[in-house]
Structures are given as structure tokens and as C-alpha cells.
Length: 351
Length: 222
Image 1 (cartoon, one colour):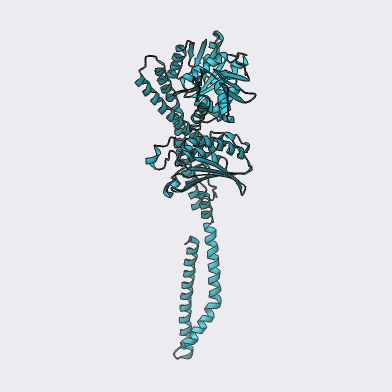
Image 2 (cartoon, chains in turn yellow, cyan; image 1 turned 60 degrees about the vertical axis):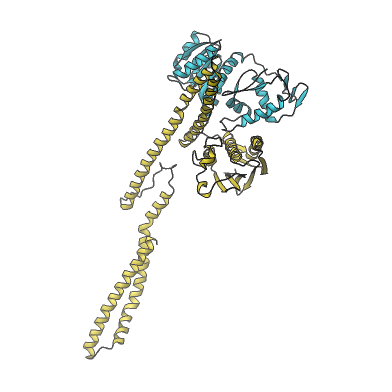
């Protein structure tokens, strides 16, 4: 129950009780006077009627007025709380730097807002430090990777190297390559978090990019005999960054192929829908149980750990896709019916 | 051929120097950005391999000043991969080539070698490697009297490999030049395309022309 309703009910109870007390007092007084006047036993009904006549015409309007007034006062008193709730509701990790507006009148609620602002500022500081840490960490990892790679290759170039040793070095190089991909993905995401990736917005024919993407997907899908189809492709121009959109499309197509079953299929469609460009990528893979679906966009989330090792990837593809969709003021959704079909839907505002 | 390597990370500089010397280049190394201009004016180099992030002065500003002085020594920039803007800026500032880190040494050597003959390179419309020919005007590829049916992408891939014939092409440079992606797609797109191309141009022919260099990329050579 809302505080306002609760307070009004309390208020009503108090008013009714006070009215009852007044009523009882008045009744006693009237009965006593009657006793004096008539020198006989009071007629209870008469006294009761007289009391009602005195109490109700004034008392009832007073109660109604009191209730309305009370309701209005609580509403006024609680308005800043409602405003505060609305403002707090809008806070997320991206806008911690924004401060809640203060009334400046120094009351309890103003003080609450002040304390709240101080808390979000502290949180912002912590988030900032974590972001900077990740950014520096992913950047710092590149130098040692370059050195390890270079030195291994130098070993490889020596003519005296034994075949077994050579195989070992090559296998190390493959791992370095994998690590490089992870570091690259992480660098991109941490830079995006820190607001350091600038997108170059220009009018982009999304349908052209989708057709090009389908052509690549068909080739990528051949080894597992997966059929890729383009079911619909409306002509659509959106304002976006061409490279990032191509990256988004390739990431999603690649995922749909990787996490599919052999001889499965991938269906891609691009449609105009309520001012949005709606891209759907549907596949026939094993999918994910509902409790895991919300986590697919988490960094390094790899679904069922027993299957994840069979699939080559860095575990950042969908996180990157989500970042790109959001950076274009759009959204991305993942829906899966395990062992039947999985649909990833991207909506981007149509310009 | 004399090459100047500008790289602040000592170990990286050292293996670049060793690898280039192993290939017969004369190599000078400097670790700071503000030493480059003096070094270049003191000795004529045939090529400069320069990191973008340098102490003293960053690679881009050094490069800009070099070009302002009308010095056209070929420059290959090295940069952490994924720094999209740096790549574009680098090429705008007058760099002749760009290689993202971490790179394969074999590719670096191939690119440095290419720096020397860049000026002599002409965009011939007819490319030939062994008995394989590619006519970029007629959009036709032919080997041993047989014409190949290539998709647009396969054609661009073959053209790129033929123009760099004998040089190792890393996956990332193929992705950049053939797909025009400025990001690592994290897929085996290049490998799948190369495999298809190889089935077309190498299956049933001897000698094989398209080779895989493990840990580095691909090369088209006789």
C-alpha cells in the first residue's frame, strides 16, 4: 500500500475516533441537562436525536474536508520523494556522473538527495577506475604478445631447429594468435566503455551490407553443410558507421553458424518495422535454456561449458554486437527454444 | 638496403633488428621519437619502420615533419591493432604502409622489402605468376588454358595475392585489403576463402602456387 493511502486512512480513523469522542461527550451533556430540566429519567432516544442533529451537519463535512486536506497535504509532502524515485530509477552505470536535482531548501529530502548524489559520485569513481584498469590492461598485454610472437618466430627462422621443436613453436604461435584475438576484442570493448571509440555516422544502405554479409556467411557455412538463406531484404537506409555495422552483421552470422548443428540452417531477414530496421538471424542450433539466455551478452559467456571448447571463438562476439547496436541507438535481443531454434533480433532506428 | 627501426620497446626492437639483419638488411635502431629526424638527415635510409607510440615524440608527428621537409623515405608504421583512427591518420600523414601489432615477422620482412620497390611497382592490368594469369580488365583468371569461374570476392583475393606474389600476406592484411574490414572479424573467413580459391586454381595443376605459411598467413609463388 502507498504511504499516501496509508496516511490518509490513519488520518480518517483519527478523525472518526475524535468525532465519536465528541459525540459521546455531547450525548452525556445533553442527557444530563434533560435530567435536570425534566426531573425525570432521560429519554435516551430524544437525547440521541438531539446529539445527532448537533454532530452530523457540522462533523461530517469537517471529516470530509479533513480527509481531502490530509490527502492533499500528504501528496504535497511526498511529491519530492516521488520525484526522487523517478530520478533514481533512471540511473545506470552509464550516467552516474549526472547529479539528481536538489530543491536546496535544506529539508530531510534535500539532504537525502545530497547523500544520494555523493554515493553515485563515489560509485562513478569506482567504475571509472575499473574501466581504466581494463583499458590499460588490454593495451599493456599487446606489447608482451608482440615480443613473445616475435621471439618465437625468430626461433622458427633458425635453420637448426628440429621438426619436433618446430611443431611446438607453431602450436605456441597458434595460441598467441588466439590470445591476440581476445585482447583485441577486449581492447575494443574497454575503449567503448571509456567512450573512446568514435563512430563515423553516415547514411548506410543496410540492405547492401546484409546481402554482402549473406554471401560471406554462405561461404563460412559450407564446411558444416549449413544452409544460409536471405528470407527478406527491404531496402533500408540508416544512419550508422559502415565498419561497425559490418562487424555486427559478421559477428551475428558467424555465431549463428558456429553454434549450429551440422546440416542445419541459418535464416536472415531484414525488414522495416515501425520506424526501425529489424534484422533477424535465426538458426537451428542447440540454443540455450531460458535461465542462461539473459547472460549471452555478458563478456566471455560461453553457454554450456561442456560444449564451449569445441567451438573456436573469443566469447566476446555478442558483447561487441550489443555494444554496436546500442551505439546506434538500437537494441539486440536473444530468444531461444532449446534444440529447436534461436533468434537474434537487432532493431536499429531507420532514418 | 638500409633500414631504420624506431621502437621504444627494447625487446621488440631487438627481434625486428635480428630478423631484418638475418635477411641481409643493414639495420639501425633508435628508441625515441625525437631522435628520428636527426638520424634520417645524417644517414640516407631506404626505409623506416616506426612505432606510433613513442617516448619523446609520437610517430605520427615525426612522420608529418619528415614529409614537410620533403623527405620521401618510405615509412612503415607499426601500431597496436584495432586503433582504427591511427591507421587512417598514419596513411594520411604520409605513411607508405601500416602493420598492426602483434605482427608476424615474416610479414614485416615482406613489407619492408616491398617498401624498397614500392616506387617501381606499376599497376599492370595483366598479372602473371607461373602459368596463372589474371586479367584485371576482362575480369578473367586462367591457368593452363582453363578459365576459372570466380566470385567478386575471390577475384579480389586472387588479385591481391598476385600483386603481392612472393610476399607473405597476413590474415589481417588480407582482411583489410580484400574485405575492407578495419577489425579482426575473429572468424576463419580468410582461411575458408583461400581454401576455395586453392581448390579452383591449384587442384589438378602442378606446381602448387598458393601456399600456407603457418603462424603468418599465405603466399602465392611458384
